[in-house]
Length: 166
Image 1 (cartoon, rainbow, N blue to C red):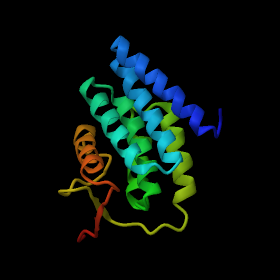
Image 2: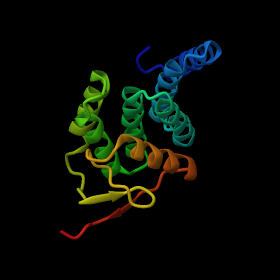
Image 3: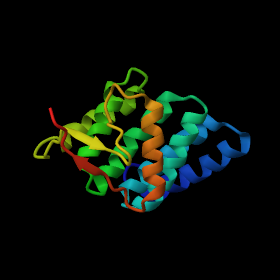
Image 4: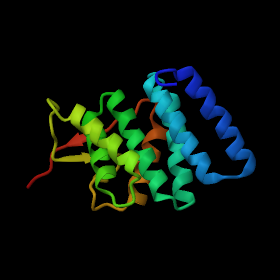
């Protein structure tokens, strides 16, 4: 199935329908994240953003930090795809450093970081919307809220970059 995005998309759509029918909210969140990753891989960024926003909100509602972190990792992929490499790296670092991250999400983030860190300009501070730094010291709920809002309020996610005074 590697590389067969149509097949992956169908799989996630079917699995999503089943998980919603049986009321398994955790599996629904995981399916949404998988679908979001598939959409990012085919450059369907607008649709991916909506799916990931739903995944993040659901993971938060059911208290599943591992699923929320996995969706944040995929959101990093989305941000990289729309040219927001600095925010992508921040999200990947956050997921990699968080103790509740699943091993596969952590490994995916490390692979992305290794690929994207070379040659990218670094910034001292990133602001999402009204100024929440994506920093490991921030609470995951705050980051989810801001990223969720960012995904829903902009067709192509835009991030305000600014330098902070030392």
